[in-house]
Amino acid sequence: MRLRAALDSPELAAFVAALDPVNAVAETAPGFVWRLKAADGNSTSLRIFDDPMLIVNMSTWRSTDLLTALDALADYVYRSAHTAIMRRRREFALAIAEAYLALWWVPRGHAPTIAEAEQRLRHLRAHGPTPFAFGMKTPFPPPGASAAPAVRDGDACEG
Image (tube, rainbow, N blue to C red; front, side, top):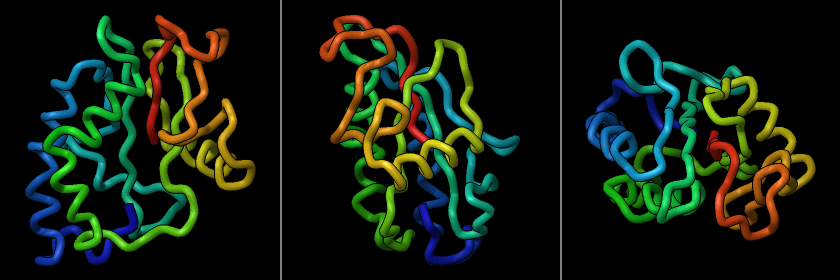
């Protein structure tokens, strides 16, 4: 997300106030495994591409009995308390012309780094969706799985 203003500005007060409740929803959502966070409990102090106005959000999601990792992530993003703050994103964030979300499969237990996210985003921007980096609308199965796996071996990372 490319911020419209500084995090401590009045323009972003509603966004900042929503961080802890929305993160709590993520952490209790089916399929949630891990999310990137700094000592303060969120990731707003961390940066990607050395840009002071870009904040990074990364998490991993695992298959459950009822949902695939991608379905679990989509449920959180589009059908939870996260959705309300997403609807207001134009108040808090500037549009980004190039790809700003990359998904990829990681080995179970791996916590991806910001450097990995940068690499995946650069690849997605340069080559479009591939098994190395893809988006929600263009998913690829995990390595070694069929096109429609019943069980996924690994966690999905969004960064």
